[in-house]
Amino acid sequence: MLPLSVLDLSFVNAGASPAQALQDSLSLARHVDGLGYSRYWLAEHHALPSVASPAPEIMIGQIAAATRRIRVGSGGIMLPNHAPLMVAERFKVLEALFPGRIDLGLGRALGTDGITAQALRRREVPRGGDDFLERLQELLAWETGGFPEGHPFRSVEVMPAGVPLPPLFLLGSSDYSAHLSAEIGMGFAFAQHFAAFDAEQAMLAYRRLFRPSRWRERPHAILAIAAVCAPDDAEAERLALSSQLATLRRERGEYAPLPSLAAAEAYPYSEAERARIARGRAKLHVGGPGTLRASLDALARATQADEIMIFSAIHDQAARQRSYALIAEACGLGAARDAA
Image (cartoon, rainbow, N blue to C red; front, top):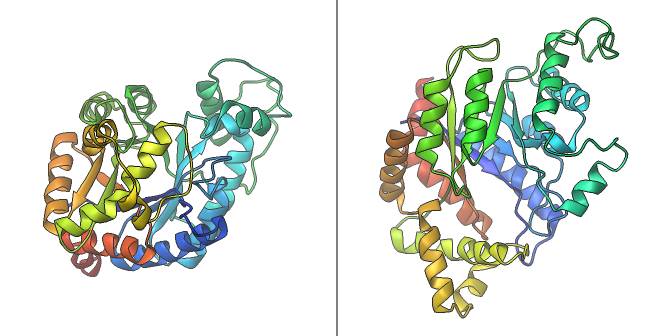
């Protein structure tokens, strides 16, 4: 079985506080560290009542300190919101503190609405347009010393000196980042849980077009999926109701906390809403351990993924932790961890 990892958005649960969501992330990270998961990535979102963590680099440090083995990284840093020098500095600090355990995943989106994006970049000189590629090139130049002679940044030394950037991944939900990460020779992570683009097409294009580089000799493609597991299929379907209702609300622009199971069960779904849920089921993998194992195996074969990263929106934290434990057991993570 392929390595399995965790994507955590630090979802705020209905009836709980954002502060509790951050504590839940720490607890989940400790839990999956012991189960044999390979990575624990934190997302960046701003000004959303449903998501508690706008600063993944802070959470990365806290989670790396609270765990022993698992790699911890960003899924991702939304590069348009940050000066490339600050990204380089922060992740070199993390790499110095936790050598060999940090990942730097980079996203092209803003992770928020337009007004909040303006506030995040309030003191920057407006550039206009999509400047992701320019920022990425600058970030890489800080690592490689690639600023040309006479460039004002050439004399600036990124601290802490002598510490490399962690492994780099580009995140995407289309073929843009698949092609770009292949051309540059970086890792690639595809967000199947919300992408409209076909995961298989993007993942296979990345592998086919990959060029070895100083960043990575071989391609490494991560498939991020949404999954809910329980002791049997019926209970898993029941637990997934919270995630399905939250998705319906997000499609209407409502970013409320993750609804409780009771609220999701009592919600008066219209026929149109039930049809929307049915259409979205290809992006949500639900079932007991055997069902989930079969689903993951099929996804891995179709996409040639090197790793599967699982995102689980389950309101009850005990059930959420149990979901990851059941998947780990079904996929033999404990046996692989013990053999290592």
